[in-house]
Image (cartoon, rainbow, N blue to C red; front, top):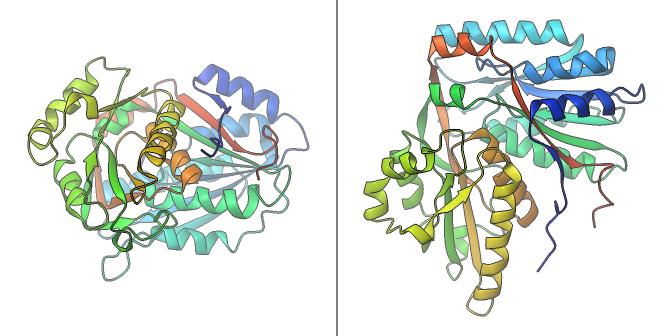
Length: 365
């Protein structure tokens, strides 16, 4: 079996440790850092940039991504404009990237758009790039990270790629997404081969469950790119809400007892606070199934990280490591509880950092 790429991995899971790392690591004048982040309505948009700017000062540059969807709600647009303005006040040298997330015919094109825009950048002068995933969608962030890893961090020695996120279960619970009507692969994550061209592969679908997405999950399950032989739903445990996994399982009870045919042994429990826990679990599952199915046509694991932003980092790392397909439904619009968004600005942020590539690791083969 191939060795896991991030075993061991350098990461920090709480604000104090992340802040200490930033203070110590980025204090060197040799560090020139680019932070890439979403400049949308999410109140977490600028927290990482603030943290970095406190240490890096003029050695921090920005790339602010405006994800543009059709018919945005005016209040959300106002919030996005305000967050964008705040980011521009934090980082003096920046570029704003405006992305159409959908084409005129409704196809999700955010991944293709961000790769095209990144191709215009000159990354040569940067020692570090921080991708702030707090306010970026899966369809944009996954291709972005894969591009930076393969085209910059792995090809250039001493280039450091970091993932950071401002964690807020409260905000995630109060952002409601309106799903589009199209199932899609995330750009660059269609797996070893198009699934429809590999009928002999034993398919295991690993959906990351979230409240209110029952119809989306069922649409994914029935799609030709998924149509699983087995399903192992991913639930957060332990979590800040001790009953979160039980409550989520209850939300999907009809699916579990119906066509999904899920029993207790089929569930995957992943530490809500630690994306490396899910990453290691997915790698273990991939290793086990590769051994079991190698003589009968092989196996493929299909990921659908439609839940927690933090756990999606674990899914991203597993997909990068083992070339796993990621199948999802893009969001066409959002709404947010205004009071929840306003309250967040008054709370102490919770940061998480994963050092994805660079000086912390020996050269990748």
